[in-house]
Image 1: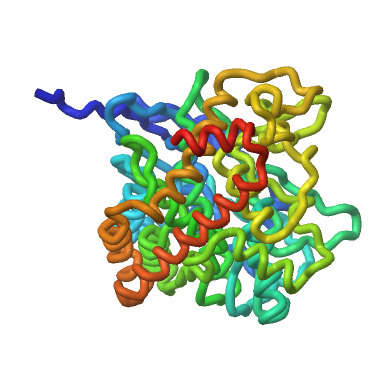
Image 2: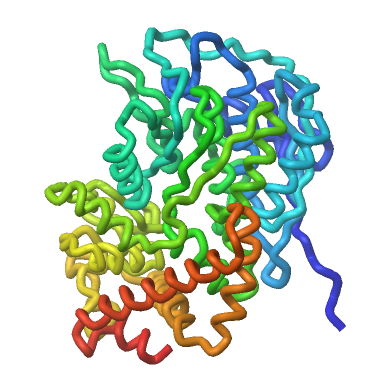
Length: 457
């Protein structure tokens, strides 16, 4: 008989210096574990300071702390996570619709059991010092961006189609806070205005599903502030639907940019702001390679890959000689390299630690100057290859029709499409991915470790 599920628990109390946490809760000190930057916050401040902006960002920071502080059980995915934080407008946050939609979205996203409590702040915030800046009060859409290929490509495609005036970009992914130079204007939504530090020592949870919550709230905040009715989600079908089509092991579905999740985020933002902000997925039924090909057709002389990153590995694990490279072997890097190949780009090999995917031996594929090769990198490489290959293998799966139907139903419902049309589009995305992956493998030598792993799968 199976034992009762084991749910690791973590309780975080967001406090200002001098305040005491609840019994059993970990104190997360605002100004120490959560740091806001005035210049970066100015990017989100219109003519008058609205403390709701600050409270929403504090919520994002608190969720991030909870998500990363407690490792999951090796047997059961879910954790019991408790978060208590100070807010300015307590009545607004205690609205049952706000709390219910918030918890529903977080549980769907991370697979955890969330309990969130709000209290009236004893330290009202007056906002950052006001700077003179041109804060646009209207736009048709917001496009979140990071340092990745998808967001840069979609921004370029939409800019060509709609022009700059109707689009505003909001930075989501970078951990850097860009400081304006003397005399330089502060740009809207140029920075994530806060940083989060670990509150407990040791290794924390690394799955990082809460990143999707940061994506949704910051993009939604930007849309709310400039009156945009929609947020454009730049993720391709491989990124948004691939993780649920070929889920890894017994893990909770990774739905950080899935239409079901973004629909729940729209519910939460509507309850909080009193205005519905839609999340649209213009390339969800295509591949990253197709998106890049469209970009290349519009901007043939631009090397879109030159200043972008896709890698999951941070600077500690993917650097040598003072240079932060991409690993070149994780699932994100494999998709990147396959997609650039499909679009006809020729990226320099020295952008990666593993420069040569054609090497017969895995270790020999790394740059000769990189000596810190270990088992975890090997595991990343195997997982990256198999993720690409398993999604491609669906094309010839005898149960493909039922697999696609099972996923097409919730996607169609969330996007307001017919099930049959959604099913056909998902099947088309799978076929295109399989063809791009096959072409990528065919261009590798027969002795390539990547090719051998894929053919053995």
